Length: 155
Image (cartoon, rainbow, N blue to C red; front, side, top):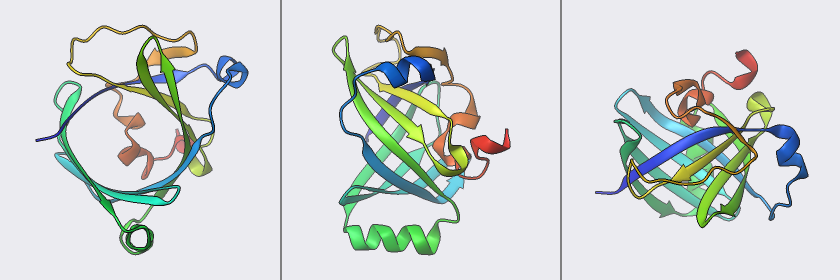
């Protein structure tokens, strides 16, 4: 079984804007199923497409299975089976030997920037970049599946 161990943080906009960044990756994603104990997500990024099944979050861990699917089918699934789609640009930033995925949201979630770090264990230690502000790992409003139905603009 695949397991995702992840922590989420908000990003200081001013410091982020000053940071030298690599080219971002445009992502569109939607949810075919969003329940308390599982989600099924369709994600299209650049010229790739994936279906991802995630289990219930326990602590900062949850089961995760991700499979590549044809791009045409990913776009069709987004259009036909996902009521709301999230648009964002992802930047992969390495800091102190760890990969940070920073999502700059667009559309109804514009103004929101969230950084995620995936860990090997729940108690793994890591350094925080100076552009990180508040941890929001336990705040369900920041789950992408929830942002798709209750976007940031509505808070």
